Amino acid sequence: MNILVVNWSWYPSGGDWTYVENVVNIYQQKGHQVIPFSMKDDRNFPSSYSDYFIENIDYKKVNKRSLSAGVKVVMKSIYSFEAQENLERLLNDVKIDFAHINVIHHYITPTILKILKKKNIPIIWTLHEYTPICPDSIFVSHGQICERCFGGKFYNCITHSCKKGSYLASTVAALENYVHKYLNYYAYVDYFVCPSVFQYEKYKQFNFFNEKLVQVYHGYDYAVVEKAKLTSVKSDEKYIVFVGRLEKIKGAHTLLKAMQVCPEILLKIIGDGTQEEDLKTFKNAHQLNNVTFLGKKSKQETLEIINGAEFLICPSECYEVLGFTVVEAMALGKPVIGAAIGGIPEMVIDNYTGLLFEPGNAEQLAEKVKWLYENPDFVTKMGKNANAHINILINNETHFEKLQKLIPSL
Image (cartoon, rainbow, N blue to C red; front, side):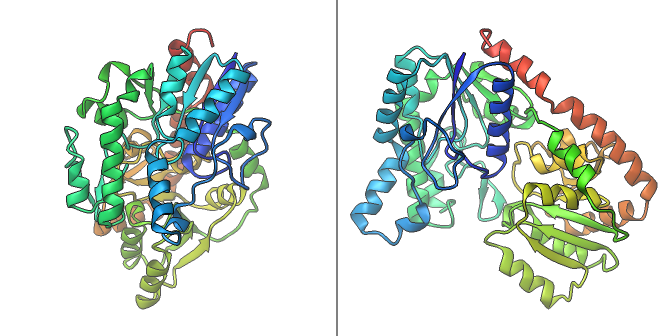
């Protein structure tokens, strides 16, 4: 079969790419041909189909352009005629048996669904966030969980300036949702795949094509994890680790507050983001000499550092769909202390594969960190449980079998 895989990027760009790369490998290993459709970028992996990709949209440069140029970019981010035209060219040149959609909002846009439907191509869409039901995609407004747009009341995004705290950005985000709801191109999708039970239930709660929603956990190729086990250099240093974007929604600020009462415990932080300087300022102001910022690391380096840690902290304060960092830590036999929010509790089973705490509760997090750090026997026991649990929950064979039920010809 020829499978069209669509994603905004065709290079390592986060959790969505981790999934895309993995599912592409699954399809190819099963003997199928994968045809990518994405956005042009110098970081993309080479593809013989890159001529069909749409031109790059760099939102960081939009503000530096003229007003008219900015308006054109905004309109393109809502409804891309270029994506339509390029995809039609591709479909005229290559026979596609079914399409697997991933992250397309703001770049490729749902307009391509109309083109696929015209060709009677079956469509499945793996949902990596919440954009169709939340204009800001993460259900967070000014650092707090927000569900005001329930029932399609997207104007709340504007009145509360949810998107980046900007009235203009929020207006564009709300307009995008109203346009897509009115055009109803989502109806062309055969199945919406939710990687966690939490996400599945949230979309159902918002009455988003409930009859087309299916819950299927991601797959994962654990070969890279096994390699990290072999290449990791043993060290006598005892530490814990945080891996993720340094943004408020990821909870690193709560973790630093918790570390104030754990001065004897060394914390390594991997990642970068807009909150990085604020976090470093907090560290210096409170003399947190037990905290080390390592910056962004390669996948291999990150896994090796996790492998040397006692356990991983996942203090997110948003509705996480399914964090691959947690998957990888557990696959390395590391327990996880995670916030009880989103899909995290589906992986972190309290007192079995790790410990859960109330999101944003630094005092409770500190208690969990100290207890687990001071009980190495539980670190070992929970680590073994974590490895067994994640290998059953997240694996390629089960993932492919469930995709086959959606697309029997697979």
